[in-house]
Amino acid sequence: MNNYPIITLKKGKEISVQRQHHWIFSGAVEDKPENLEEGEIVKVLDFKKRFLAIGFYASGSIMVRMVSFEEVPISVDFWEEKIHSALNLRKATLFLESSKTDAYRLVHGEGDHLPGLIIDIYKQTAIIQAHHLGMYQQVSQIAEALKRVYGSGLEGVYDKSAATLHSNDSSQDGWVWGQSNQHIIKENGHLFEVSWEKGQKTGFFIDQRENRLLLEKYSSGKKVLNTFCYSGGFSIYALKGGAREVHSVDISAPAIDLCKQNLEINGFNPSLHPCLVEDVLSNLKNIPTDFDLIILDPPAFAKNIRSKHKAIQAYKRLNSMAIKKIAKGGILFTFSCSQVIDRELFYHTITSAAMEAGRKVKIIHQMTQGPDHPINLFHQETSYLKGLVLYIE
Image 1 (cartoon, rainbow, N blue to C red):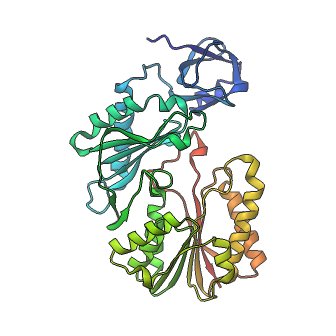
Image 2: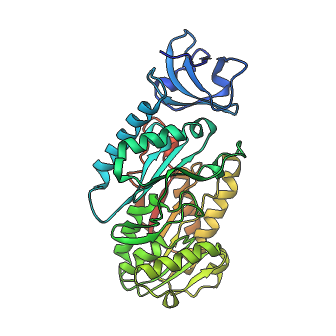
């Protein structure tokens, strides 16, 4: 069917592939061509030379990332079928025909059986982010497939892969097709300015949609502190839920500027709801003990397994300080998006923080990523966002 170079696995190493895990580590490889190029499409066979999968080659510890467990050519037609499949899931879970939300994740890497590919939809703009060279080399075909699937519903496709392609210094962010200046999106009826060119990730943290909606229900009449606020997502939901006062804190000045813009376009006066450029730990040390609701949504403290111990200590210190400071009967929303910190370890870390703080703490909700960030049953690494809603006596 195709002439892709062949990688053969050692005996017994085919089992994880047969279970549809998307990664092959270098230690599992028995034989491969010497002249393989980074990102090249390869065919993977077991030790008996039977077909297993098609994927992208890399010279690192993860040697192949599989995109198909069927022997098919990787073409525009392939990407169109994959995008249709991903869109059908979002239509089934997000009620995309609603007029209240026009931003969602269309493709979530291995969660949609496409390792290293993120596609976020902001109104009529698609933002592509490739996390390895093989996927990056497919961006033009992916953009063509998006045009086929969305038709006139798409104004532009923007590639934002430069920061995530650590081995390719020549890549630059920019429009692959079309262009759009519609930077204001709706989420559950709330408005947000999204900066995909200069903002973090693809411009907005879509994975917290359902958790922000939950917070809105707890916000009425409360004094709220939103730490690591970025563009103020939780702050807007808190105010829409009737919070009497919201303080938003982030160490990034551009993030705070964006937060202020979002307050304004939702009808709130930033001067009445302080937006502070400040280190979160320094802020927590100095705040009064009258905040009724605190949000801790830090960036990933652990980027890899080597930083796991330091990350645990950082989560513990941060949560202990917030638990000590929050008012009696307060509500704490606390999160970790570090993939190497699993749900059980996060739970135990927060338990240690509560013990250190010397307060009685109850879990009233357990949270995860939204349904447009599906967790692949056969690839548990796609489960990354963990959250707890705590009641502090």
